[in-house]
Structure formats: C-alpha cells, structure tokens
View (cartoon, one colour):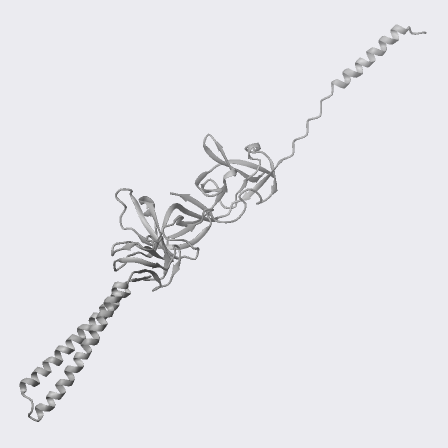
Length: 378
C-alpha cells in the first residue's frame, strides 16, 4: 500500500512536535553558587596608645640679659656680630676711654707724689727721734714728726685708692660678656654716644633651654609628676624629650590657661624665643585598635565586619562597636570587640552580614603594621 506524500509530511511534522514537547517537559539545572569573596583580615592585639595634646611652645633661655654700658661715651670699637657665640669675659664693645685714661695717669702721679711725701716724713721722723734721744730735739718736734708721718701715710693710701678706682672705671669702658652665650642684634654703631641706659645687645645662653606651654586648665588637672613633653619639628618628628619640672599653681585669670615648663639640653640647635610644636603625653596605656578604614557606619553607628568560623564556613558578622579617640590611622576600641577577634579590612562595601568569605591573607592589610598610636587632643 502506497502512502501519499501529503500524509507522510503530516506524520513527520507530528513526530517532530512530539519530540520537542517531550524535551521541554524536563527541569532546568540549577545555577552554580558564587565562590566566597576573598577578604583581608586583621587580628586584634593590644598595642600602646598615648593620650597626647599638641600645643605651641616658646623656647626660653635660663640666662638671657640685655647688655648695658656702665660708663658714658662714644663707641670706638665693636668686637662681635649678631648670632656670634662668645665665651665668658669675651670683649663685646669698647667705649672711648681717653678721658678716663688721662684721669688714671693723673691719679698715678698723685700716688707717686704721696709716696715720696710719706717717705720724706718717715725719714724726718727717724732723724727727730735720734735728736730727741740726745736731747737736741724737743718733745713737741717729735710729736709733730709723728703727725706728719701719719698724714703722709693717709695721703698715700688715698692716692692708691684713687688709682684703683680709676683702673676699675677704665675697665668699664671695655664691655665684656658676663657668661658664655649667643649674641643677639647689635643695637649701636661705631661713633654712637651711649649712656648707662643705652641697650647695646643681648646675650642668651642656649646650651640649656626651657620650653613654656600654656594648657587648658581642664587638661592641666591630668598632669602627673612624670608627664613628658616632646618638642617636634615641622614634620612631627620628635627632636627632644623631657619631663615637666614646673606647673603654674594658678591659671591665668584672663585666658584660663596654665603654664607648664620643661628643660632640656639643646642638642638640636634651637634658639631662645623660637616658637616650636610641643606635645604633652598625658597618659600611656595598652588598648585594642582598629584601622579607620575598617569601620563601617550605618545611620551614624560604627560597625566592624568580624570574620569568624560558623557551621563549617567562614562568614562575616556585622557587629556594632564603641570607638574611642582617633589616632593617626586607627581608632581606639572601647567596646564591642575583644582580643583575638578578626576584622575584615578589605572589600567592606561588598560584604553583608552572614556572607561566606575566604580569608585572603591573615593579618595583612591596612593597619596591620605594629607601632604605638597617638590619640591627639587639646
């Protein structure tokens, strides 16, 4: 029996449709789960935290004077330049001494005359005493001879005192450094007339300097006998460190600030009256810290993404925390975390509470380095 072509074509189409329907009736394979996200973690361990405050300090010299002349006259010579270091007794300046030199010469001549008169009176007295013993001189002549010797000796002593006075006065014309130090600006020039109240220059001793800092009164109450003061350079590097030796007993009534001082050997080449950065270390303690970049904030509440093992998987937990002061790069942790907790320090924006993760590199990431943190305050 022959099948007609049209009927055969219909049978083929029906067979194809049945096969397609049978294939569509099966279930699709589920999609593969995404791999856990890799994160870097930091294991929390206690480290040193310093409670500090940074202020503007002023350097003071323990010996700082304004040099004044002790005599009046014209400046004849200047021996120093501003900024020059001098030793004790080094000449600073000379005031015209010609008048005083002439007065000294006159006093020395009077001293010589008085010395001659004294020797003549002594010789005359000795001759009178010899004549008196032989009965050739009277008692009155003897008394007169003795009185003349006493007067001549007194005149000689007076002349010697005048010479000494003139010598001292002449020395005042050479102005000298009272102690070793650094010369300030020279305020006079050659030929200037100076008097006893004319400032010539200043000399400051810079081997030992004091730094004076004014603190808020509420911060001054936290000071202890061993509180340290650090002098910093412009980049924040510590130049000098010394304990406080002075705390003012009362606050300034106008500013309500309390002055404190520390002294140190000037090994950094600082100068008196210079303004410096000064840091007061109020307290030092051990505490947990978390990098600032590892803190997530939601509606103002800080959270940490804590990595922990749970039911055979490594997951993150969004845990609320209490933050303390902010140091250079890290916050002090006051609550919510404990020693040994691991916190995520990378991919924070992609993490969700309960998400499975894979630890990429334990204890490697922002803030994982060691070192003391400083909590700054004022």
